[in-house]
Length: 318
Image (tube, rainbow, N blue to C red; front, side, top):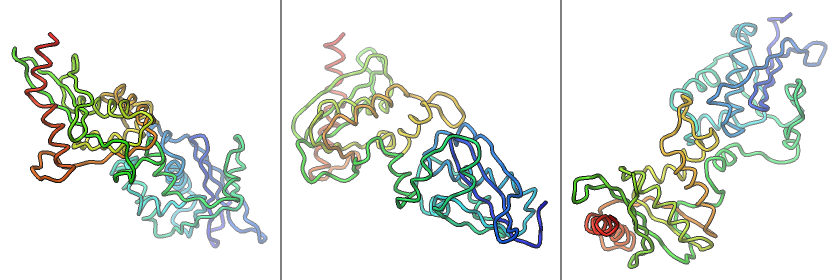
């Protein structure tokens, strides 16, 4: 039975998309178990990177234990930087609503103190397979860096131009009506002065999809090269750095378990990004009339992917 004259300590752990926790109090100088908790994470939390699954597990364990703790002093012990992830991380893995819920449960409790530790956690001894938690005793573990790596399709991808490039590529897409009024979409992959690839897409009626395909093709034409790719599409940039990898981890399902739009093309994009030897993907401004290198290259790609070039392709391919 709990003794409400003594503070509680809750040891939390996440393993195999399950939250495991042990609620303890001091008894005879040692931490004595008061209650054990375990539960499966919800379908949205289960595919998250390990450090963010730990956040979900802590929130779940706190909810399970509150009927016993009842607002009395509680120290929560976890092997992750939970407070740092909630206050300093810029990950796109968590929706605003979910992040706010975790902040309220974990950081908004007046009776709770959050501590990180890497010694043996009794919650890891609850029935399940032995996992890599023991490695935390030997290596320093940086939750922000690990979560950031889980967001990227390859660890060393950059959003600033490479110091050495074999080629610098500009990608643009367009959607317009052909000579008979049918919507057509196409893309262009160019250097600042040369067309590498230009094509229209059968059955595609979205400039967004065209730009996504253009990004994929830019990686193919830059296979085994050091390449910097400039795009003016926020959607394409987000696929690379924000939500593409997250959707891949979820099996290309949204948080409501419905299929992601353009899931197959996003998968192709994430696969293609491995082809260059080194790669940077950079968001640039669209339709800028400046004479700097990036604006001129983006303007050229826009012209190539624009109406005159695409109409010519439509007429010659039909």
